[in-house]
Amino acid sequence: MKIHGSAVSRIVYVRAETGEDLLVALRQGVAEAGIKSGVFLSGAGSLASYHFHVVRTTNLPPGNTFIEGVGAFDILTVTGAIAAGQVHAHVTFSTPHVAMGGHLEEGCEVLTFALVAIAETPGADLIGWDTFLPRESASQ
Image (cartoon, rainbow, N blue to C red):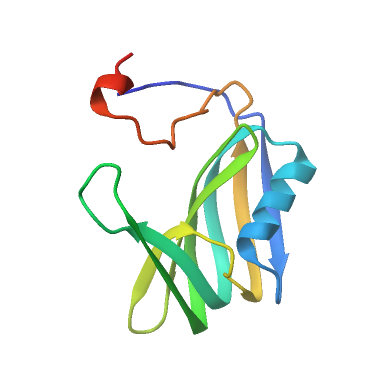
């Protein structure tokens, strides 16, 4: 286990417009705002298509399953982190009948808008925190 604390220096909001790719917009927003480390606080809006992946196996490292589709979906939240300026985001979205989500991939087209709040944490060093390390390597 790792523990690291950091202050929040500012909240940055990224708004993606109709037809934009949500992940591409987040990457551009993070780059334009100069965010090197941070966490996603929330996300709202809607999607016209989705593309995400989830873990597929319990083998380590696990395999991934990629899922995509089209339709009208409400964004329930965007979570994740930014380490060394790299976006690692997860998305949850729903229809009246089902909620889905996982690791955000390119191909999530914004329907009306998407509003995502990011807390910049300049004192945090999260490099490698989103990378699988075998248990014996993790403690070193």
